[in-house]
Length: 236
Ligand SMILES: [Zn+2]
Image 1 (cartoon, rainbow, N blue to C red):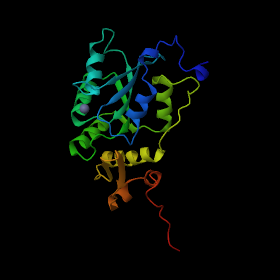
Image 2 (image 1 turned 135 degrees about the vertical axis):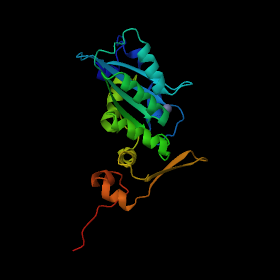
Image 3 (image 1 turned 90 degrees about the vertical axis):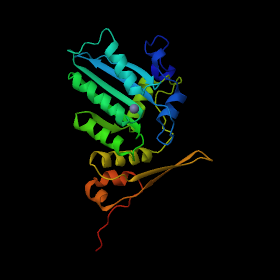
Image 4 (image 1 turned 90 degrees about the horizontal axis):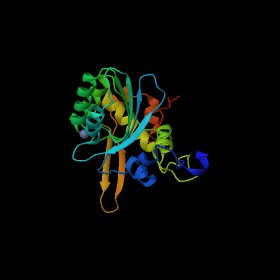
């Protein structure tokens, strides 16, 4: 059984899986690693089969590599419906957002859902606008949460025998911080998440600077999930 032995030796996806250490370092929300890892699955037409693979950035960003590879595949048929899901360690930069939009406008039968572990240079207004444009053009963008980490571990990682259930090394609070910032981006609010790095110990610090507009526009449960915002208790 796969749950006791790890992915079986005959599993055709085995050679396309990444190693556990790669998954841990690429998708850790606290690791500001330079490279990008893209795990993707594609579903064609009404088929229930999902075709899974991974990619990384080369001289091009991982998103551009994906688009070039997909459109050059012999079996790529623009008239067939195609559902694509990406699990990206970094959210797309503004240039990739433009490339994705262009690709989708040329291929109306393609739908794209993007889960990201971290937001790439989220203070840069061009990157913020790029993500908003993607959302406005019908792309679903979400921060990876515990179910997505577990899903990727089971389906994209060459997990060790008996360890099909993924043990998350970090608190969901880190994901909640990015979730809050993604809301700010989509709602065109100013950034509230500050990330700094102490080079000596390679530690990453996360802080929040919230303004009235954040309290007014962000749903309370998103703010509370960060663990850094106290619930509002009315004074009696
Ligand atoms: Zn990019």
